[in-house]
Amino acid sequence: MNYKLKLDVFEGPLDLLLYLIKKNDIDICDIPIANITEQYMEYIEMMKLLDLELVGEFLVMAATLMQIKSRMLLPPDPVEEQEEEDPRDELVKRLQEYKIFKEIAEDLKEKEFERQKLYPRRIDEELMKELNEDAKEVYFEANLFDLINAFTSALRKIKDKPVYEVRKEEFTVEQKIHDILHSLLQQTQVLLTDFFSGVDSRDEIIVTFMAVLELIRLNEIMIMQKRIFADIVIMRNKANVIPVETEE
Image: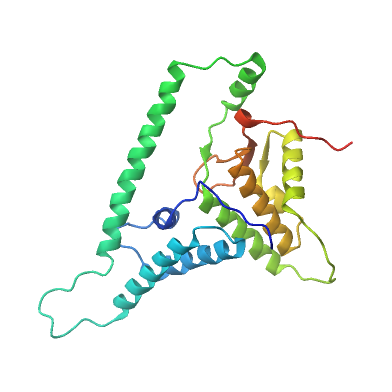
């Protein structure tokens, strides 16, 4: 694939670890390193496949996890009288500190949102009507790792499908961007899985996923969830709506 994508809203390796800990309902002070390392490497492989930027710092964390895993496999030193330090302690400390900063940042973001309600911007009646309709349902913003999780699930389903015919198909990110925006003209909300349904080509799934990431980078769409780890819902970003040509 010759399409390169650089995201300015990239979460880091500690974000991925916290995401996996929360997803697996794990005690942050008692991380099953072997299991988490395996899942972490799966996400790394997806990032490599998509040729995403900033993979380097994720590889550094992967090396750290592998080192911790190796140390935990070693038998205790019979000569050492004092109790040996848990190899996970330093990582747990980093995660706990980072988690606190993230919670503070989220709290400040929420206060900013509440503050904005006190001084609302003037908007036209049509937009106000749309916002009131959207307010009937509560959504939470999804993140990059939720997207990668959905992407991985779509690729796994492709592997299970038998291939009876070999044919060459050309898919472009630009065309998929047009298809996604066109779908959002017809519906205000579309499930991410809907764009993968009926697709039997690995390349088409990858290109579709790249198109979604590009639209996020351009602030053209928002990715939301009704609850944590639920299906991802794609919506237009009303603050950045541009005219889209429709097919006749």
